[in-house]
Image (cartoon, rainbow over all chains, first blue to last red; front, side):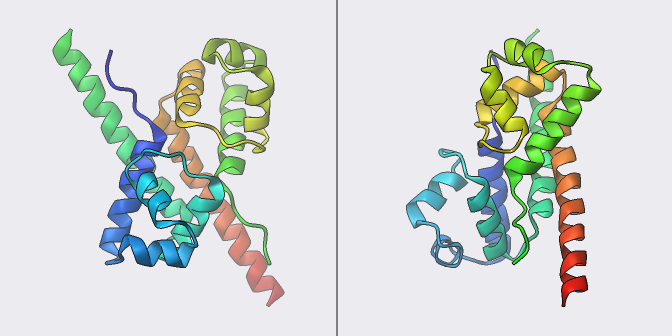
Length: 92
Length: 92
């Protein structure tokens, strides 16, 4: 069975990529968003579910609208689904 | 302070709207996705955070790709942000 595509994995990768593009460290974003450094790091690695309040705070700390983050999530989700469909085709 | 735009509110509304478009009842989706009826109802009303596994199962039960759901979430989020900016402008 192929690995399941999970929202928290995609969201974490999108948040990390946006933070790096903004040239911010984990420490800067955690302070600005008032989220613990360890928790934010787990979110970025897709290991914890982010609450809606956390997503909102982190977006604000990154200077981005939530709609931009979810637009990126939708795009990355579509790419993962295409890659997964392709692997299924190759296997069958 | 304007009401904060939260992911769980938007996701719930999107899931409900997709379920209704598919002509499915809460009961049918909860059975198919193996989620309790009460929990699914709370998710749709934006009262509970949905786990990534639940989002994946509900999408499958609705016959939709997760990327479609998140595309709708991004669009609805952008509309809510626009409405919120507009209210801010009217108030100031």
